[in-house]
Length: 471
Ligand SMILES: *Cc1c(COP(=O)(O)O)cnc(C)c1O
Image (cartoon, rainbow, N blue to C red):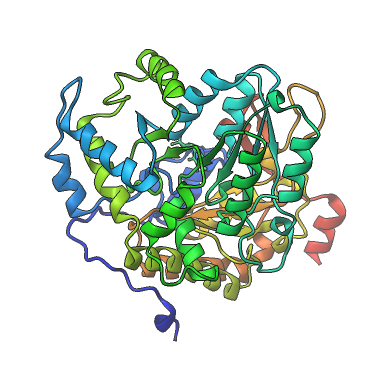
């Protein structure tokens, strides 16, 4: 029965990479040695690794073939010209700045345009975007639509709140705002898509108030596929046509090509403003490399030129989005509450709802994360109080966190649907032994980004709870 719902892979496998499931005793030993922090595990000790979809995808035969065509010349390489032609044709801008990943595009942009105290408006800033803006003395403002907090399966939960956007702009002087960004899909809001209608409204407002409008478009093809499926008027258009309509509405884009570039490294800025291009290119030479390679090898540029085309293939996107939806449906059937609808690149489990017996100070999301490793050798990641909680180093106040989530990000073209079934079966086992899932306390932590390096210990149950359990 489940077979009929599985999105059939539109590829066959030519090269395989062995993975091995450690025994339960070995998994127990590894996670204890890692002080219950999955960032400290060795990748080889993870059977199915759903830590991130960034840079973890599999390349195609055409990409590997293109790699052999890499022109490694310092200046004016053919590989750059092929990359540039592809980027210009999809993103429809005059100038292209290559760089080695998305956060460098952000660093270049904000180092160049941001003045101290200026605001940057976004549907939701991704964490490196937020970090780069703060680092340059700017103020990132998130304006997600109200629906993004709803428990209902509403489409386009990634949208920007148009009323708040206009209110913010009219409440400030033009020179107080550096730019407006729409992140597609909205990564920090669960990989939820943004509708063309919403993008058009943002674009109109930006042009009315003469504000630069950029995309953070790491997952542009996934977003276009959702528009095609869910928004009226787009079902007959190709992904390339939808992308063209979308990018014609903006002044430029910043992209981490480690996602929808279908490559393991890469990023770029594309824009029309020639004067700004000149300033960005000057900084590029200082921090990344000459403007025709920008910190990438010629072979990387070749892989990207092919990957950016392949990612718009609809058979691929149907399988890709279908695989995320399939895993989400099976996790929900297993008895774990998830964020609905599922977005473009990951399934988010609501660990707070699933484990009401674990208070947020004891990190229910981390409890579930450790359970997935112990039960199945599966690496997932907590996105909740462990990642975003703690004390704000600037204000000394306790940081507030929305939901206690666990993210299962799916690498592109890497795992088969039977791996997804295996993850779902592991979820069923965890549901059956739900009372065995424990909370955690932090033993050692750093001031910034503590989740990467902290050490944890199993939280002791409060005495009255221990008593109840014993009966
Ligand atoms: C991954 C990502 C980035 C940062 O890109 P890196 O390649 O990891 O440096 C920026 N924005 C979004 C939306 C992303 O998903």
